[in-house]
Image (cartoon, rainbow, N blue to C red; front, side, top):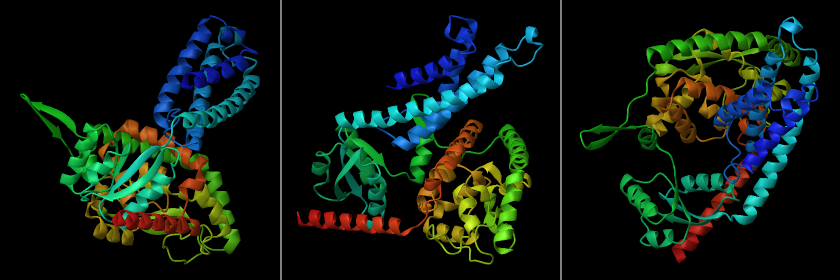
Length: 459
């Protein structure tokens, strides 16, 4: 299905462009170069946005990621066609059908999105018609809150997994129970039981989904070192070398200048709208924490009523948010002034989130390893900003930030920049707050877990 999908995408683009460029569908140098460019760019872009991975991700993220890949691949391929159609006979000018072909490329993209939508949702329907959800068991550390959080996350993928049982890691019947299920979800367990359960699952062909901790990040990013005939895992503290520091800083400056130049008119319109609504200041300043725990004043467009307290947004109807603020927050327009912080050297375009000072102190008390995230400058975007939501737990956001730090590379920064576009295309997810429906769902999950734990205890 994946091969068919990409073949259809290429065929649609080439068929429409052939209207003014018949050589595109013939055995020619033009068609060969365009085909090679489309395949290569699609390969690189799918490594950034994600593949057509039916049965693994949900349908909407697949549609968005594959559509973005197709859009940029179309632009790159069309750009090559423009270059090849520009020659001395046309006085080095664009060929006469340029604007007509631009419309054809846009039309091709519309048809590509339709094809992607049909094949993604249709593909999921066919896949799950033949592949039932994995019967799963959760091995708990005894913390009800941790189990509730895990169950809530797994239930969002009910077509992939069915939670059949929750069992504590020190239960005497643990291994007999594990034998009954196809996949095992492990909470944050003590080291020895965790190792024993992993070895048992490996031996008995069980899939394991383990909650990520700092130790796991260090292990997974380690490299194998051979000293004579002895192998070691070398876990090193990741730090930027000199050329990475220079390139990252130059990229920050360039992206910030370009970003402010492009978004300048939108910022002025937004500032005027904020001023008109309540007459207050358009720019909001708040103390945040960056590299080495140093403080700085972060700039944002004001989305709340002036002088409102800066505590977390509880729900989307929070009375502190202005009408203009709802729109700005939904599309992350309020974040644009942070480019000024980047130019000043207080932030980077890509990096861990810039947290409020009081929240940092609270988080460090709860999670001592929280301080590790200040080994790099805070960023406008990053793994936590892309994959997390306002109501993602502090621990999960920390793991995303530490993942970025431990896997840092300039290529990863490039990927994150491209992936940030996806946040703007799914604002409902990225700005999801602590609303009543979320709390109601949490209460429902808590009741289900409690009932199951009571049932297991009686048995």
